[in-house]
Structure formats: structure tokens, C-alpha cells
Length: 91
Image 1 (cartoon, rainbow, N blue to C red):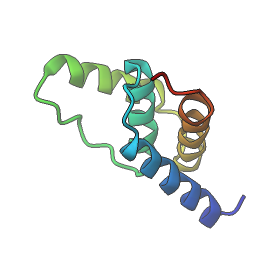
Image 2: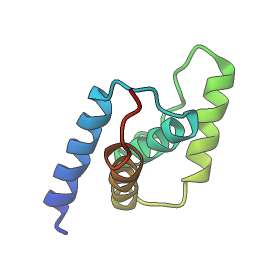
Image 3: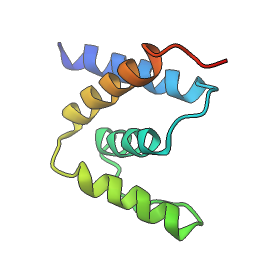
Image 4: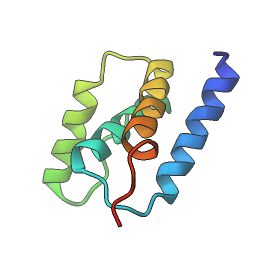
């Protein structure tokens, strides 16, 4: 997969998540958050006003800290495909 293809698939997955209306489990949201931040090379501190949420986000980033931007994009895409696109929605 070329860099351009990877970036396109990543942007599509981000758009899919942004428009997703069903509730998502907290652990999935935290993984997506960490992969997104790493993929975009955004290493700023979490910006929640709730200290506990900041702690969970920081922990998610720490757990994923040893991967590069391309791997983070691939992981994000894979997670979206596996957990959101392939699972039937609960109505």
C-alpha cells in the first residue's frame, strides 16, 4: 500500500468514525484516540476538563507510544473495520 493510499483510507476511517451515531465502548474510543493522535503526530496533552478522562487518554497514548505514524494509521483503519464496519448495528 502506498503512502497516498494509506492516508486516503485513514481519512475515510476518520470520517466514518466522525459520522458514527451508535455508542462506542470506552476502550475502543481510547484506542482510536491514541492511534489518531500518533498518526497525526499530535503529542499535546489531552484537553479534557475532567482529570480522570485526561488520565485515561494519557494512559492510552502511553500504551501505544512505541508505534510510528504509519502503523497508527493502519491500526486505526483495522480497528474501525473490525469493530464498527463489520459488526451489525444494534437497533
